[in-house]
Image (cartoon, rainbow, N blue to C red; front, side):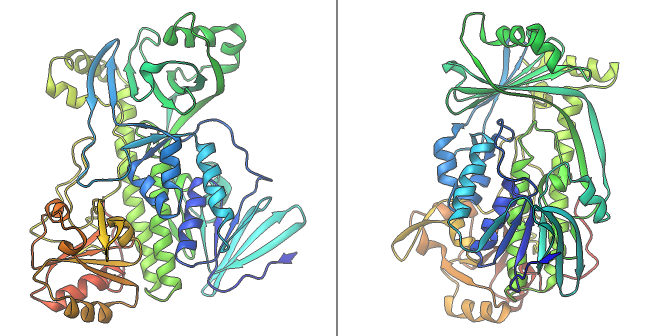
Length: 543
């Protein structure tokens, strides 16, 4: 057996899909050495898979150098239309509290996303990728982790400080090895997915969702535009659907022709059939192992909450591991990874399961209820609000996290309306916008992702604030007057910031606290809380 010697402080990322790639790049950005292990002999790009990337995920990828290219190559869209048969019921707006550099959504194949992330990883000296390493198990103790692998050269052990498991949905054996339960439900209906290449200009910049169209009676169809005149079409089909038989009989061609027309040339680029699940592990931290992405949770794709949520896992895990490894936080900070990201997963499962229940009603009563809503929706705003064609991906809010200091004057109002970002309050992602520091143009979230960001009003003494911050944390801190970095007033207006306030922002750009500086001890506590210094066990997961 080969034992690979690894420097202290290294993290193993188990799985080289987009969540694992993102985790590795984010860790390296914090100066952490990473070993990426994957059982496959090499990358196997195929099919569109997770195509729909949300604005705030593009922002995360921008932090590691690929977000702008993903946005430039993908198909951008800001319209999501829902139809009942051939009648448009509504078009979904997307409201941003800031002025993001990115559109609400970009469609690009997962294969191309992985390629762009691979190219960036190849430029990063702190990341080593090892293909052909099947992870058989984990040994861990207080000193670190030993990853047990089977390689082409025989058994190997990779010793590291921590590991992040991003091995995907099919990691049943590994979850069992960690002692994880993966409870949930499986939906009976299947979904047929075809990527077709065709010239259909009218579909080029709009997500289209059809309830009960004449070309899939009694079920649903979703159409997404992709680059290079490619369109992703999802049909809801019965549980006994047979793709091979339909292809051989010519029925698949007839199915496609009923949507695009009898004469239009097209090419099938990729096709597959999926049965969807709603599942969540009972823990996302097992000692020194954090579990992320599809390895930790599965949701149906209506809402694009799979990969987008996995990137949220990656960023949450990366900054917390970095803070622990760099000595800026205690290991108890890692407990909040489990708490925060399982709360996010529960929200995603709740949202997507409600969508699936509307798409696939299980009883005559549910079917009749859905029919009444769809038939009334064209003329009734209340009925339209009940039509569930998928609430699209959004960042989770950590309002109930132990890292968040609540502000009675700015309470979190709960899940916002579809397509609307919540107001900036503690726990919510900071709105992004262009700012300038010492005459250099940058973006607000780029400042936040360098450590702890303190934004303050004009009546706050910056020298005193710096002294308090240095006493509260050893982590990197940036302190900026709101008026100094944005002379237009847009940032102060977006935050509704007062002159005597300090906004404490976490390294993942979530607002941790809004503090009146009249009491210095409150500010010090808020900074310590944001870095986990005041977290106490046991943690109770937010619902």
